Image (cartoon, rainbow, N blue to C red):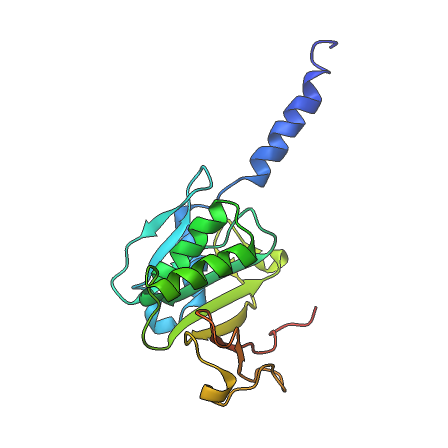
Length: 199
């Protein structure tokens, strides 16, 4: 008994770590990730998710223009995104810099400089990002089911401004489109419908 007791805190700690880092199956990740995309583009989307070590990897090679990224199991709440393939250089560079430990401001400044220098290519046409979020209690990581997800739509239009688009700098009504980061490489139209549930 004396030998067993000191092991109990250690075993509990190991179990806690395993529980925290448990990665959903590829099938569950794919099912949840593509829910962020328009219905007619879900089946053909390329999907990135997480392997057992927590590294982001391609889970499925698609055959259309949509790329989806599964929820990060290390982050609170559910958050999946899908975007047009022409945004992949911008998105993958952001993930790379984030992995290096760069802050949000550093990532913004680095990508701004790289886009202006021509090193990092942004789409020439407006390109869309679809985001789906939900609280933890509305996401089943075992099955990949998300209930009452909240959608957000982002249309990237690099270096656009309020003057060039006629959009306001902030929403004046629920779900109203507005422009964020105007005049920069990350200028985009934001459209955030009200959530389908009450907190």
